[in-house]
Each structure stands twice: as structure tokens, then as C-alpha cells.
Image (cartoon, rainbow, N blue to C red; front, side, top):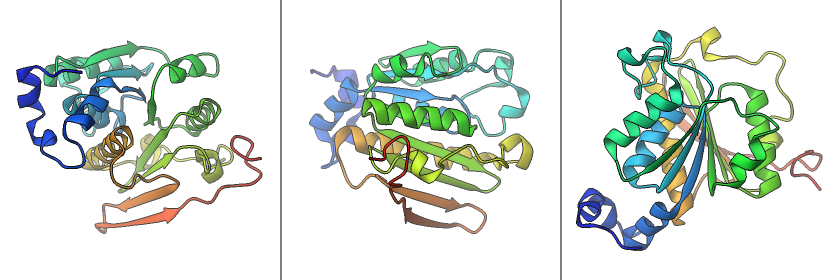
Length: 245
């Protein structure tokens, strides 16, 4: 897979990395990534993956840009309030890197469409803000043997995990919590979205090129208020209805 002179210049700071180089950049160019949710996590992740040269990125979101999004979802501009989030995010990605192919799906992911959309990609990033969708994405990734980068944030804290089989996200969250919190309810500091979304993109890049140690079966928890981070192991649940025996 040849690179143009412009591509060599664009990715020059990546190409000199021993862990990435030409072979890694080719893997990025050939990769197909699905991003579910174009909000605080999905937006920064989409921008960085486009900038990194991921060949095809599919955006799935059924929401429109709202004024309350703008303090943390930096892929949007004030003039885009009311626009489809997928369209606005795709525009920001193409402005960064016109060589990246961006597919837009202005619809919520559900049990009917999840299998076909996820099957058509190499890797999934889940940046949604509701547990029902998170569990659906995870269960479908387990069924189709697709790696999942799952990230979430609220208040001053965020978490990122990678799941490639066992354990899966359902091992961590077996069912929708009855007291589930949302950013609308508990709030979130804007810059945290950039931190967590960028980490999700970084984990995706590592998985695609096979570099370093991804957060496979682990959860990185970042406390922005205290400037502390810790990583915990996620135990496989033998009774998990998605990945259990």
C-alpha cells in the first residue's frame, strides 16, 4: 500500500516511531473503525484517528448538536447547533485529513442494526452515555469477535477499557444499573472529554498496529480533580451471559 509524498509528510512524525513506521502506517490506512457516539468521547477520538490516517471511520449517532454540548465536544462549532452530529463530526475530520474515508450513520444503534454495522469493521470505539447501548455494543463485539475500546466520563473522572473476548464489558457491568448517572444529571468538566477521548484513540491505534500493551482486560481510571490515575484488572465472570462458558 503506497503512500503519496503528501502522506509521507503528513505522517512523518509517526513514521519515525520504531513501534509504528511504514508497516504500522499501512495497517492504519487499511483499518476500518466504527465509533458509536459522536459526543465527548467519540468526537476527540474521531479527530485523532482521522489525523493518524485510519483509512475508514464510520460514525454512528442519532443526535443533533446542542448548545450544551459545546463546552466539551470540541469537534462542533456554534454555527453547527441543530446539525446532525455525524455530519458535523465528519466535516471536522475531513478538514483535518481529506484522505480519510468517513461514513455517516445518522441513527441510533440498536439490536437490529448492530450486528451488520459492527461486523463491517475491524474495531469498535464505544463513546455512548447509556448502559443499555454499551451492553449491546459489547455483546455484539463478543458475538462477532471484534475488539472493543470502551470509554466513559462524568464529573471529574473518566475510564477507558479494552475488551477483546474474555473478560468483556458485561463482566464489569452485568446489567443496566438502576441508579445510572449521566453527564446531564451529574455534570462533567469539559477538558476531561479531550483526555478520555484521546486515550480511547491511542488504545485503538495500539490495537491496530500491534504496539505496546493495550488495556486488554484492564480498566484505566483517571481522576482529573486529584490528577491521579490507576489501572485495575477486570475479572472474567464465569456466569457472564455474553462471554461466559
